[in-house]
Length: 255
Image (tube, rainbow, N blue to C red; front, side, top):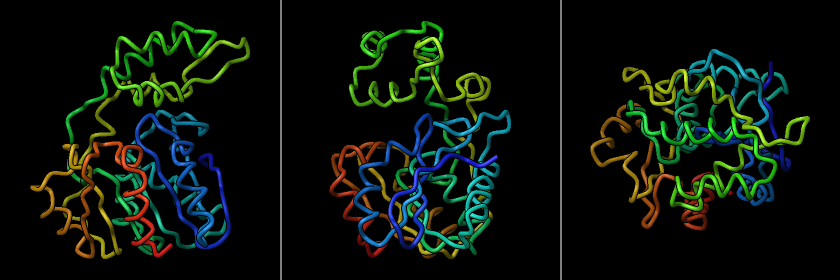
């Protein structure tokens, strides 16, 4: 099985890996711009997300293997990779274990360490959305509004809805699998593994995902790395500070 992709532009391949409960579509605005700068941008949906297949096996080694399988299936022998959150850990795993494929690595607001699960409330809300089978997005938005103050988060969750054969709105990500094991996405990467791939880590200063205390480990595992910080940005730093994020990426990738 091959993960779903949306490919824009021609040139050097740049693979973009989304975060948990997201999809490649979340990165379309950036992809359109980057595709005009000599990059063939591949927006990939991780297994159990977006339009990709559902499978009970779901962890970082498997998600990374999916990316290599995808590259091999279309004859790509090396690529740049950018990943946010869960996608950032997948991208790190690729650089650590498949470095021959990786030209450059960009990691958005995630470290190789383990995290405590922070998604229980979101997953329960998505499960409830799936069970209620609303027929309009307005109904679904009205359901989410008292649960989540952030309009940005509500819109992000609503992107998981699609119409089934009865025209009811269903959640397209594998919500049952995620509820069964919320620890997969928070897992630590092997602290003994190292990668010499040229890397850029970008963190939001309003986020707690990359702390100052994480710098030593990042530089230990990725000795050829630099870390940049964005002011007035949280975990969704690319959405909150898109111009500043884009400037960091385009400079690093020489777009």
